[in-house]
Length: 220
Ligand code: SF4
Image (cartoon, rainbow, N blue to C red):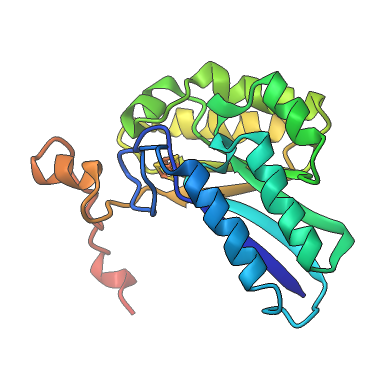
């Protein structure tokens, strides 16, 4: 099985925990897309004719791309590779980008799966993480995506933030199940070097969790 991954290294704003490769300046977005189109052409023989079963737009925030950019990249892939009929074509998307207009446009492309960076349905968590969307957008985008025919969804959730109470986490899971989303990815919040969160921890604004010592009789 062959798959093609396209990294879109742009974001609207920097989430406090994130150390992925991205820029919050969109200045070079068009140049980047043009370079990727060129690279796809240059690497046209890389897969030796193997059928492509998955295409994945990851980031960064691929939902920041214009529909024309997405079409340009997909056209280039379809021109140079044998993409199977039922290929899974995924776009990572943030809730604040998924307007009805955008979803309708996305539904007209080969994209048939959305990976939505919800992270939490709770306002306190989203503020702590410095996400660009609010709790209302987190719910609305799932409803709207499903209304536009995107049933193959995966939702990212983050646990372990100081704002995430047990109740908030239970509600997050419950809401996701109620939406009948077929796949959930849950990530434990980690403090990555050189992130805003790392800086806050160093300054004492947040304390790290410490491992509890196991009672002696449980040590093997
Ligand atoms: S978590 Fe996603 S949206 Fe936030 S800065 Fe990282 S890549 Fe961008």
